[in-house]
Amino acid sequence: MLYAGLAVAVSNAAYAESFTAKDFLKLNEAHQKFWIEGAIDMTGLVISTGGNKQKGRCVFEWYYGDKHAERNSLILASMKKYPDVPPNAIMVALIERGCGSLKAKG
Image 1 (cartoon, rainbow, N blue to C red):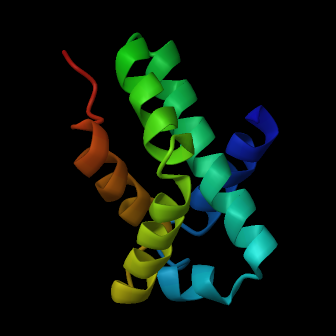
Image 2 (image 1 turned 90 degrees about the vertical axis):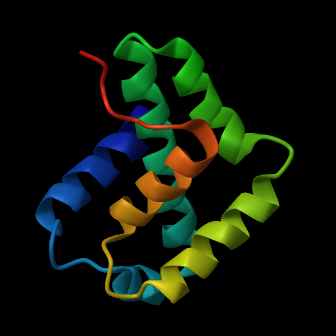
């Protein structure tokens, strides 16, 4: 899990402005799944270890819960709808819609 999250973090840093949802959709299905799960895992982990365990749990439950297939479809549909937006921005927007703001308090 941590390796996947680190890989996503590194890939996001390297492609922050040039890697778009259109590029994401060109990845094969296995790579898309790896990227999405890494983004979810890292987001939930960072929020939980940052002191908000309840919100971190929400991130995991939002994606891995009983609506897992629905969440995957939503993510992919959003990538198609906003092809010029970085995938990490799309992920944050979707997670915030499900769990509330991810901004740190303070």
